[in-house]
Every structure is written in structure tokens, then in C-alpha cells.
Image (tube, rainbow, N blue to C red; front, side):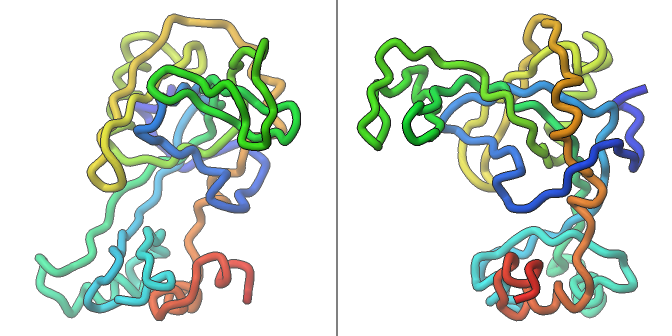
Length: 234
């Protein structure tokens, strides 16, 4: 049982608060993860791009992905009904699960800012002026939500089938490009035993953290309200 048998089940406890709770893959540095969940949670999303002809002001004009609450109650699905197939905002399957971000960082002892390597080289000084002399990079070891599409999922499923459970080894994510043009290649690392039980309380409730907004909330975002203002009831 594992990622190749995807079901909507999760045993985590913490709820998401902001986008910082989601793992961000970037072409600025390689990201190393350890998967914490046996299975991912699956759901559907529409992506409404910035400047869309029907919803030009979505999320204050910045565009965003919106989780579909279901065909009968989703404002975007309702709009799609009146459109030719080529014009519809398509639904994409997304997968979300807890990971331990093990990317090496140097954490400033003065201001706690985290510094990643750039082209394999770490900075020698923090923006606050603190020197990093004698300080070695260490795994970040922070629980985050990884939410990605089928391309990354297919890679993880292949690793699970060939090398065993994903919780037994790290996976390096090498991303090239930005935004919708980004491509991520995942590479399994040699097995390494970790006591993952110490992170149990930090795991997110993935089902609750990715649940769709109400129809009214989605309409407010489509009309131009900021996502965070809507979810905070402002």
C-alpha cells in the first residue's frame, strides 16, 4: 500500500494557515524532501490565469488556482457550461501530502533567517550583518505540505515501486524554469534511517488544509477580492 494506491485519507493533525506552509520548489536551489504520508490526498483544481477574459480581477488581478467544490456548486464549472471546450478553464488533478523539508540551510543565529545555497555556494554573511564563519549548513527539517500534479507524482510512484516506501529515503527535486514553465526532475537518494515519529505533531491535516472554499467565497475571489482577505472573513 502506498502512493500507487491513491485514496482520500490522511492521519495528520495541523491545519494550514498561509502559503508558507506549502513547499515551494524553485530553480534557485535544489530541494530535498522525505515523504511522511503513506498516501496522498487527491482533489481537483481550476487555474484562473492573470487577466482572464471572464475573470480579469481574480485574486486582485493576480490569478490563482481554485479548488473545485464540485460540478454542481462550483462557479467556474458553471461558467464552463456556457463555453466552447477550447475556452473552458480545465480541471487538473492535484496531490497533496506531508513532507519533511530536508534542504540544507544556514540559519542565522542572530535573526533566524534561513539561507539556501546559490549554485552550490552558501553566503558567508546574513543581511543583518551576522557572519557565518564556522557555521555549517544543516537540513532544514521542517514539515510542509507538498501539493503537485501528476508529473511529480508519477516519479514518486516509480521510486516507491522500485526502491520501496518513500519514507525510507530522501528525494532530491531539481527544478528548472519558473512558474507554469517549470520542470522538476526527482532523484531518489540512498536509504537513510530517520526517526520520523518526532515530527508527528507537526504534520498537517491535508484534507482540511486543501478543502474547497464555499461558492460565495469563490465568487468573491473571482470578482477581485484577495484570497487571504476572503478566508479570514475580511
